[in-house]
Image 1: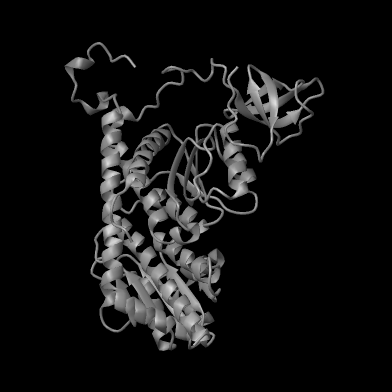
Image 2: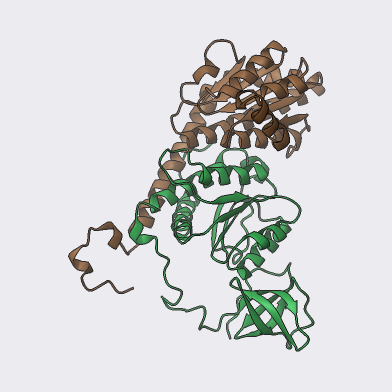
Length: 246
Length: 219
């Protein structure tokens, strides 16, 4: 085993640092972290117990829950609230993981993805921390994956020592305001009305959306929404980066 | 973000801290140092335990060859290591799938035993119920002192199981005396770094077992 720190490690360290800042801010704002690891449930359980029952006495217990089973989409959909966190530990090739992450955007969750193997395509999670180029099944048991979430936990608690930095930046700060820009947002159809409109969850909140421009939709479909109008339906297996600008 | 007009008067009050870039740089540097520490510890642990792990792996392979099964156990994060090790043995990425089960999986059994006879006995009672001579008992504990592991190893030895222990710090009770036949110690006092190195050790054991079984089948 190489004990040297390479370029990949430098990148991973930066990814962990920014991920920990976001995670601490989400917890400070009242988030629960929902953890799933379809290929390696033991890692999902480990990361949850790490946050709930800290190994260092005096560190605060944080709400983290591991979910498993055949219907992860249904479980997270019913339990998570807008502003919560979804943490996935797993490889990029698991189809259900991509679907869950895509829907989580509509549900208003901040998404973290820790894994190993082939790096996932961009756009499926706000924070991706990855161990690349290794045999995923072996890397998952070599100590490298558990190291990722141990560090995520350790750094998140460092951020808690800086209360002035725990406030989330307001949505309209910076160069682009998502609400006012021309970005389309992912929405999940909940109910279809007879008048060409549908109840669609966008950023975690139910909105009445005009679906007359798209092919007939059914509850569960994902659509790209802009200014109250569904512009297109999203194929669950489609490329992940579906933001469009007009 | 615009600083409050009087903010410049109190630049060192932490609650007034606004710019996260310094903190992010510190976090990244801390992450790099810990990654290096984790790798070093894993390397030195594999090195220091090379012979012991080889002997333990060979003994485990011998048990598997004659129909032995692996039972794993641990508490908290170590329970998940026990479970992950079972995944590795039973659903290996390559090589032979081996009979392995973790004694932390069944919540009905765990809560029944904890409620009725006490948490100290949750693993030993399952050893009594399931184990046969020729099986393997493998326990994970960072302290090496978990009471329910010590009880489980005691019961396992009594029943002629092969006993394999992974522990941290100085090894605790698990490493003292002959309670555990093959005890692999990660010399560290960080629970996290110990668990990472225990993962590497368990992977090494699995690798040795697979090698022995392959050699055994193609002499």
